[in-house]
Length: 99
Image (cartoon, rainbow, N blue to C red; front, side, top):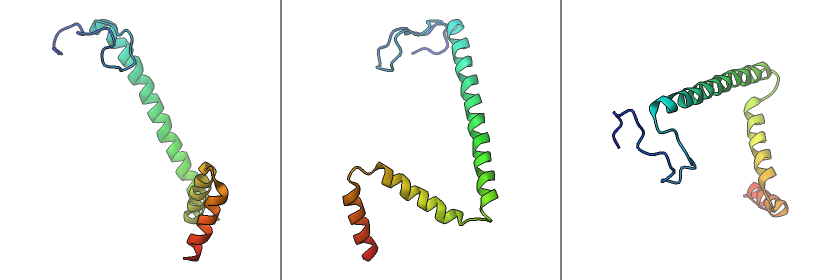
């Protein structure tokens, strides 16, 4: 595919990418890509802010509770929530605790 020319060589989906019609010229495609990149950057920035907020929350409570143990307990709770056969799971856990 020649990437130097002003036109895209394809405007129909031929690779199962889910795109039915894509603009055929760089002039039409550029604003779409710019919009996508701007929205993506905004989301990534918000994610960074949320990570900072999360760390501040952990820092705030780390002097009040054992955060490492709480995080482990939260992981266990998340796993238990996903288990379909809870009685069997609990039996397995009880056996593993005894070993």
